[in-house]
Image (tube, rainbow, N blue to C red; front, side):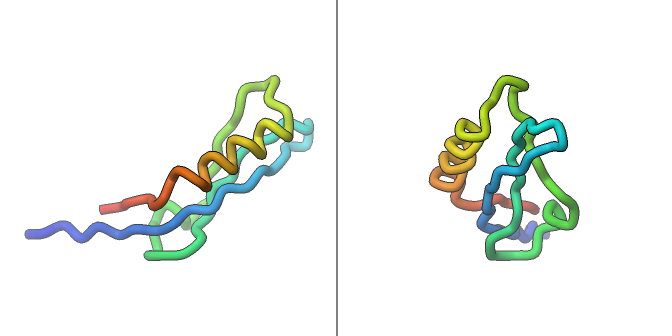
Amino acid sequence: MATTTKRARPHFRVGEFGSGQPWIIMECYDGDNLSLFEKTVGFDLRPDTSYEEAQRIAKFLKENLVTLCES
Protein backbone atom coordinates (compact mmCIF):
# COMPACT_ATOMS: atom_id res chain seq x y z
CA MET A 1 0.00 0.00 0.00
CA ALA A 2 1.37 3.41 -0.95
CA THR A 3 1.91 5.98 1.76
CA THR A 4 0.44 9.42 1.13
CA THR A 5 2.78 12.23 1.97
CA LYS A 6 1.27 15.55 3.00
CA ARG A 7 3.21 18.79 2.64
CA ALA A 8 2.78 22.23 4.14
CA ARG A 9 4.78 25.44 3.94
CA PRO A 10 5.79 26.65 7.40
CA HIS A 11 5.90 30.19 8.71
CA PHE A 12 8.30 31.14 11.50
CA ARG A 13 7.90 34.06 13.88
CA VAL A 14 9.58 35.21 17.06
CA GLY A 15 7.76 35.18 20.37
CA GLU A 16 8.94 36.08 23.86
CA PHE A 17 8.44 34.33 27.16
CA GLY A 18 7.44 36.44 30.17
CA SER A 19 11.14 36.56 31.08
CA GLY A 20 11.92 38.30 27.78
CA GLN A 21 13.67 35.21 26.37
CA PRO A 22 12.84 34.91 22.65
CA TRP A 23 11.74 31.67 21.02
CA ILE A 24 10.77 30.64 17.48
CA ILE A 25 7.17 29.67 16.78
CA MET A 26 6.37 27.56 13.71
CA GLU A 27 2.92 27.85 12.15
CA CYS A 28 1.33 26.54 8.98
CA TYR A 29 1.42 29.12 6.18
CA ASP A 30 -0.35 27.02 3.55
CA GLY A 31 -0.58 23.50 2.16
CA ASP A 32 -1.97 20.29 3.58
CA ASN A 33 -3.42 20.07 7.07
CA LEU A 34 -0.61 18.38 9.01
CA SER A 35 -1.30 16.88 12.43
CA LEU A 36 1.90 18.61 13.58
CA PHE A 37 0.09 21.96 13.44
CA GLU A 38 -2.79 20.90 15.70
CA LYS A 39 -0.69 22.20 18.60
CA THR A 40 1.81 25.00 19.08
CA VAL A 41 5.24 24.06 17.75
CA GLY A 42 8.19 26.09 18.92
CA PHE A 43 11.93 26.09 19.36
CA ASP A 44 13.73 27.29 22.47
CA LEU A 45 16.92 29.22 21.75
CA ARG A 46 20.15 29.58 23.72
CA PRO A 47 19.58 31.65 26.89
CA ASP A 48 21.84 34.45 25.61
CA THR A 49 20.02 34.83 22.26
CA SER A 50 18.89 38.40 21.61
CA TYR A 51 15.53 39.23 20.04
CA GLU A 52 17.37 40.51 16.93
CA GLU A 53 19.31 37.26 16.62
CA ALA A 54 16.07 35.30 16.99
CA GLN A 55 14.61 37.36 14.13
CA ARG A 56 17.63 36.49 11.96
CA ILE A 57 17.15 32.80 12.77
CA ALA A 58 13.44 32.98 11.90
CA LYS A 59 14.29 34.74 8.62
CA PHE A 60 16.88 32.06 7.80
CA LEU A 61 14.30 29.32 8.45
CA LYS A 62 11.69 31.10 6.29
CA GLU A 63 14.15 31.41 3.42
CA ASN A 64 15.55 27.86 3.59
CA LEU A 65 12.84 25.46 4.79
CA VAL A 66 10.49 25.09 1.84
CA THR A 67 8.03 22.49 3.14
CA LEU A 68 7.41 20.13 6.02
CA CYS A 69 6.44 16.59 5.10
CA GLU A 70 4.23 14.16 7.02
CA SER A 71 3.42 10.62 5.98
